[in-house]
Length: 364
Image 1: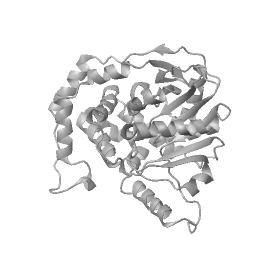
Image 2: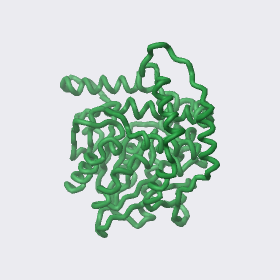
Image 3: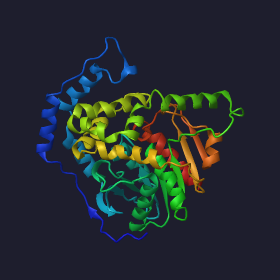
Image 4: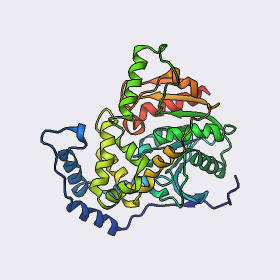
């Protein structure tokens, strides 16, 4: 693709103790805001909820335990298109296993996939990158990191690893990256599996049943009442970032809200805090938010993907897709509706998600 060959180097996370001490000190000096008496989640994260999380983060959570868990998996760093790319690379014991690239979204990280590594690595060679600007792939050296550019970088990464034939899975932004891979690298991508898909009507919806119309109403709520973070990060990500980069409590609130509202139950606190701690320690509040700005300023209706696509629908996601509309933009060959789970499926329902991914690729 015209990029100079750059080596892939082993990587180990080793955060300086001074950075952890600084985090704890800042948490100890948190100044909490006032709130309207009796207000609930409709105005944002309640003070009582955040206070409990701050207390646990300060006194009980142990970053070193989770750092070691991440380091138990082979990690690497390389450079693609001028961008530092961090990724986990877990090879299956089956030498003939299909390579599978897993892509997270916002406000997530590679932590989201930790609980699916073991079941999926029985059947797949796993490549799990941090998105450009996120975590240990941050920050970006330049602008313009759209979904198309990320997908082209992922195609280069898989080629650099020697994978000529592979599959892709993603949720949130990772879903968009996987679908773009279907357009930029269809000759090497055997299939796309996603657990997040927004479907928009392009004309009359008279042929949709009551259930599908209800899903479209949920989409309106997501782009309206639940879309505050998307609106800010699509327009003024840099201004927001000053507060998040200077206050770990602010960074925690900004992310914890999504893990509460976009799921159907409590996410494990240590998983949540490991995710937040990575954003904090790598100072990537600003660089991760830039993806929203890039998308908003470069969006155009994508061409139909020719690659076979599987969709896993979890009922408590922020918005649920309509299959009739999805079939207009994607080559849908597999569709599963689950009874439990939400936006962060790999964290919430790792066994169900892993089995659905496995079933989809078996069908191909």
